[in-house]
Amino acid sequence: MAEFLPVASFDIVIFGGTGDLAQRKLLPALFHRWKDGQIPATSRIIGSARSALTRAEYVEFAAAACEKASSVAEWSGEAWAEFACLLDYQTLDATAENADWDGLREKLDTPNDIGIFYLATAPSLYVSIAKAIDQAGLISAGTRLVLEKPIGTDLKSAEKINEGVCAHFPEQQIYRIDHYLGKETVQNLMVLRFANTLFEPVWSRNTIDHVQITVAEDLGLEGRAGYYDRSGALRDMVQNHLLQLLCLTAMEAPASLDGDDVRTEKIKVLKALKRFDAPSAERLTVRGQYTAGLVNGTAVRGYLEELGPDASSDTETFVSIKAKIDNWRWSGVPFYLRTGKRMASRRSEIVIQFKDVPHSIFGRSSTQANQLVIRLQPDEGVRLFVQIKEPGPGGLRIKSQPLNLSYADTFAVRYPDAYERLLMDVVRGNLALFMRRDEVESAWRWVDSLIDAWAENGSSPEDYPAGSEGPLSSAVMMDRDGRSWWGS
Ligand code: BG6
Image (cartoon, protein in one colour):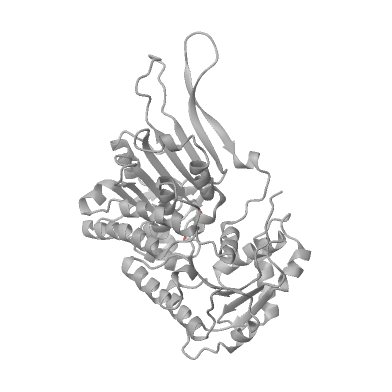
């Protein structure tokens, strides 16, 4: 049974309190933390949005959301009734010039020391809401502002948001969320690397041939066509989630787990990423867009059909990139990144491909190089492929077999959703798993070089059938290097 240390009492105001994120992630995450006894009963959870709802209506909305997000075993009517006492709702158009903040101020009249403003809204509203919170006199030393990704659509827009928000909140009070950092298995990456002596001596260009990072999804647009078509896979997934995974895989050991120590090491990796120009983007990246196909045995529509009748779009739903990190540890070791919608299956994994032994004494029975496969989701676990002798007489046969550490077999516990961990870290004031301003901007600098290079090349994404591993050119890019994607 996992143990949960209660956090201090807090107030949280969720702007966008009736939106998709609040419904699917934030309210259920808070409910689960309550159920496990982590949230004190003196805390308050206030949803806020433009819709004129009563408190009772909001409680009903939240109940439906939390029950939907819980398994039968996780749901408890009794726990819900207690949790509902923490809930409240405030109708407010937080960006309107003449918005009436008195209602919210009244609800927070005897505030807890820790006050969280969670902006689960469109990023274009971040600056005006931050300003309005300030003008309403609601910022104190214990206030935290939480921002969801995407912070901007390029470096310039990200800088504008950051500048605007930082005019009202000090950096140490801003929590920029990348929910991948809250995933158990992503945090385990740091433990695996820095709590074992085994890996550090082999974690470099001396022994590693290349690294692959795959975040494949079988889902399509899920009703987010408007957002996604302006964004695409590069902005939606690579700029944040994949680059965070790359940083955690490639960074040096931080001096401590303190927020700034970890983030400083990640930024060094981002700064060392080699930027693209038109010719290198042509050689080292592939863009794709799915057409109709079969995903897990079900026929699904292509991207353009999902967008609507007569739609045309050059937005990529798949991207693969051969990234280079120009520093001593990783010189000459490619990091292949790949992500896409409507791929064959949902899986996120990091594959560390070691080099071959320098000389094989086994003659004709060939050996394969070691691989460390870190499976982030689903079937979370770590497999280290080693060479062993296949038992039996009649020659020496060598096989590659995994030392297999499956999370499900090892830990019989419920997996908390990433938001549960992250929300509790916001309350605790632990910034380590949140992105610092310069981190977001460094990531954009590299991504912008690719956006510009693609624009200069003027090429369109290549088709790939839904339910496949992406466009053919992605496999060809690996093949040219004498390598292949893991599992293909
Ligand atoms: C989000 C992206 O940040 O991450 C979505 O906007 C994507 O497009 C999602 O589907 C993937 O998250 P997860 O946790 O399901 O892997």
